[in-house]
Amino acid sequence: MGIELGRGKSLTQIARRGRFASTTTTSPLLQRRTWFWLIGAALVTLLLWQSYASRERLFASHTNQRAGSVSKDVYNSTLGFGAIFMPVMPHRSDQIDTATLLGHLTGISITVTPGIYPENINRVAIPLGDYKPNEPGVLGAWRAHLNIMREVVKRNLSTALVFEADADWDIRIKEQVSLMAESIPGSGQKDAPFGLDWEMIWLGVSGHGYPADGDPGLKAAWKDESLPERDIMDGYIKSMLQASKLEGDQWRVLARAWFPVCTGAYAVTYAGAYRILYELGYNELYGPTDLELGRLGRDKKLDAYVVIPPLVSQYRTGSARDSEINEYASKFEGNEKGQSGSHVVRSARKALKSLYRMTEEMSPIARLA
Image (tube, rainbow, N blue to C red; front, side):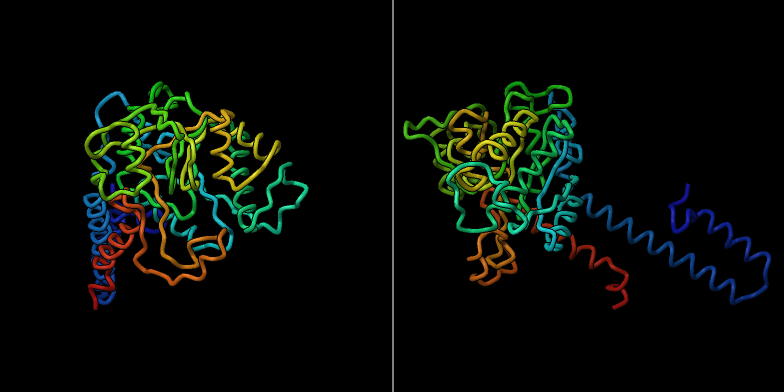
């Protein structure tokens, strides 16, 4: 079987046509053109194969399946969840492009859903409560997340994962979620590798607090060699690990979500999406989405947990492109390099540049330069 090129023709078919042409015509010009085309096609095919093979070697470590009882579904294109969603404002084509690149790089499929402009939200659509947001974008974020919860309920998805548009994760994320699936109590069910004994799990926060009694509500803990040393991680991570009484480095914990900050990434079950849609879309609203989700957890209206250190981080460049919620972001100067949390060692966003440089060096244009 030949490699398909163009309108269903393979190199084998083209080569046969070339040989036939060389025996049925005496035109040297036609022969030269045929062989020139064949050689060019072969070179392009070789370059593409080299690019693919190099990419696979470069990022193979994050796709190797672990042995054990963990479901192989965690290695599929949705990390074992029913779907992966990412709300993005319609005018942010840069974020949509980035989501496509990140998904291709790390082998996951991301469904981009439209963000909501706050001016399109009628005040009568906001649930009862005393919430008066200082930033109009906060209401847009609230509605964008509730639209995703509505989609989970409409499609009757067992689970779903939500990424914010500025999310960053390790290129070994499939290995990382497999460790989580092995460790969560009740996991390993058919079509539910993380189990269904929960309603929401934060996979990405920028801060988290625990009760004054010092009990973090630990549910599971596991070792993860992709993590850095504890000393270089953020303070809230070190505090949580210390409260969990875990010695040494490279621990992750699943604990009760008490005071999570931000919604960098979170997973929901069908039951969780239903509760969130009811509580924040129909019942009451008293604050920004992340704080309201935390309130539901503390009030035991939502069975919510958090993974610390998080699997997902916000990626910040220090420019206005970082936020569609906070207007103050435009006051900061941009930073081309960007930065994720200290717990993301092999940043997927930074890996995009490495892969681009590699393919750029292999480009036929570069070879002609």
